[in-house]
Amino acid sequence: MKIAQVTCCFPPYQGGVSSVAYYLSKKLAERGHEVTVLTPDYGGQRYELTKDDNFRVKYLTPIAKFGLAAVLPQFLFKLRGFDVIHLHYAFIGSEFFIWLFKIFNPRVKLFVQYHNDLIGEGWRGKIFSWHNRLMMPLILGSADRVLALSKGHLRNSKLGPLWQEGKIKTEIFANGVDLKIFYPQNVDEGLKAELGIEADESVITFVGGMDEAHYFKGVNYLIQAFARLSYQNCKLLLIGQGCLVEKYRQLARELKVDDRVIFVKAGHESLAKFLNLSDVLVLPSFETESFGMVLIEAMACARPVIASRLPGVDEVFTDRQEGYYFEPKNVEDLKEKLMLIIRDKSLSQQMGYNGLTLVQQKYDWNKIVDELERIYQNV
Image (cartoon, rainbow, N blue to C red):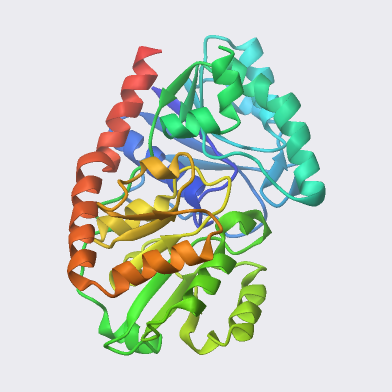
């Protein structure tokens, strides 16, 4: 099949959507499909194809752009010749042209992978609200299948009303993890020393964007919970970047834990080293999170996880088996769950083992792409 992977972002941009688009493109191409990634040219760094990449990447110049929003009317002709269009939603500014193309080319299969709801504050929230009311029903309604991450995600996201009213056709399709990159490794003592982490200190880790688009990640709640820990022989490792970093630094200073909070940047392939020196990975998002790729990446490294109990996220692992769930924004609840793990090494190791087993059975990218091929072929 000739497959177009249409995404608003692609590596080296770091994020769940770009990572999923990359792995689906790579794995589908390995199976003999002709895969082309279509993504906006934002004027920044581009993905450099390697000898192992059998897919193509085409950068399209938008007539207007803001953040990851891009207006690309050239989709009206750039999508010609494909058997399958796989749209990673949401793609603000370009869904209209993809919808229009589908209207005039009904035989081309359109699959929309719904990553997360569009939710924002202020003027951003108003734009998203307009988009959700007007554009979202059009593009999702025209899709041959809408791919939801889980049953909870389908029921509780903005997909729910459209699904209940029979306006969209859906399939459950989870994310995966690269087990060749994320696997249990010996702790990199050099990296630990470089970060200023003592040999006997526990490490609590967060991975995610720290910009306005990722305001919902809940880093402030994690810092507050960390500051309340009675067990202080530990460090908090915040991996990511963005304009909110200074705000979080200031919060750490106000709570007098800035000497134990470490901010660091890490590429996707080096992330496994950071996860392997961690004692627990925390996903403290308080809304719009639908899965949490970093949860399965940490579990693949045999590390226990703690996550907010959000629809979709609460189906990634089993509470008290691979880690713990806590109530969103509940700093005290998060603190208690952190204490349970960092004070009990045998529990931590067992949860890590359980997580590794779960990932190998359920979230291996090879198994995920088996399911995607089935969906493509059966529609």
